[in-house]
Length: 142
Image (cartoon, rainbow, N blue to C red; front, side, top):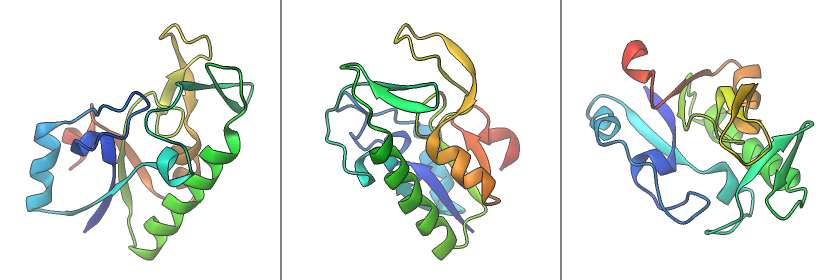
């Protein structure tokens, strides 16, 4: 089985600040599954590093108050295409992210407050039948 995984969780330095969110135990899944790393933000054309962004009133706005929604939507579309081409039924995505968060995302104040909601990519994948997990709960499901 092939699984979409946020590239930052696999140790790739694609996070907004140029670092990663590597999860050592997540790497061990590669013994049982084919992991397909994706970073929707980079795939959508954003640079590394880049300004942090959060969803505000349905739009992705960065810290300079620029609407970067189009980059997030393009990246989400590319990830969906990869998921469909590879028949991925599961994605393990970075929690709370404006791209990958599922169930909770940051509230748009850039103060690390969480609200109920989904990132652009996780929402698109979910609407297309992909089960969304994150680095905190994938152990329970796989």
